[in-house]
Image (cartoon, rainbow, N blue to C red):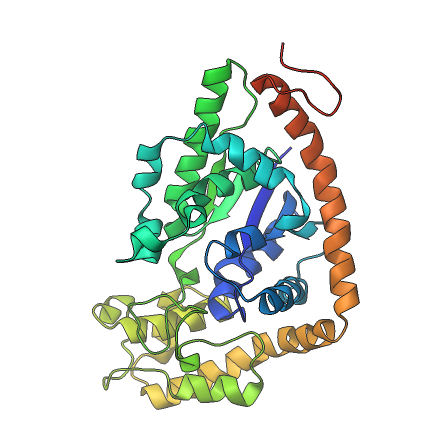
Length: 338
């Protein structure tokens, strides 16, 4: 059996980068794997969250997943905090992982910046929680971007060390599913930075809740250079904003970038942006409409999450009992390790 676990943080409006880089790929994978898709609200609170906003963002993120085509019947959609096993297994992994491993995690250094002493312990240790997210369900594959490869390697290290320490092959060695560079969407204001929900400028991203006029406006205002589009991909070298817009068009049209430069080579950006805006609206308008419908029915979204949590707990419970027994805890059934 092949099983996927993947998660997304509920930290505000999901954007085009989330759609092309993650959620659209989840939709494609759901016919090939048994899938668990998680709103990782435990990860979200590694930095301060306003409680009311967090609640709203959990619903909004789940609605976006469903609107993009993730099937809540075929897959398990849930929010992390409703399955206590994530936190329970994470503590065990805190005792398995080594400080030196976490000290090498580059994302903590990037997120904490110059204020490492003021960062939460959760932010430092969250790669162990990420490992618990995956291994609690004995997932075999995880779709990851290039920036998450290091964390998946840590998950593999933790699984191997646990299996070695206790002399039992409890956890699988998870394999990554890495998608191509066309899914790496950059800021519309700075082609050297990833599109991000945390960017101060709303014009840096296309939100999945943006209407057609807003999408077109943001694309028109996207940063470009004065030269026309090249007719080869090689001509995009050292032109990050041009490369980004070509990549977005290619991803939305499901083409290779070479096909886009061949079709639009020599066009001025003002004209190319019109074509890109038309395509983006065509692809995203149905998603936005469905998101709006789902957000108007919060009870339905909450019911999807609750049912997903029940199903996730059913999968997690035997794994956690097995781990408790191997470690030597007295489990719920009263049996300790042997």
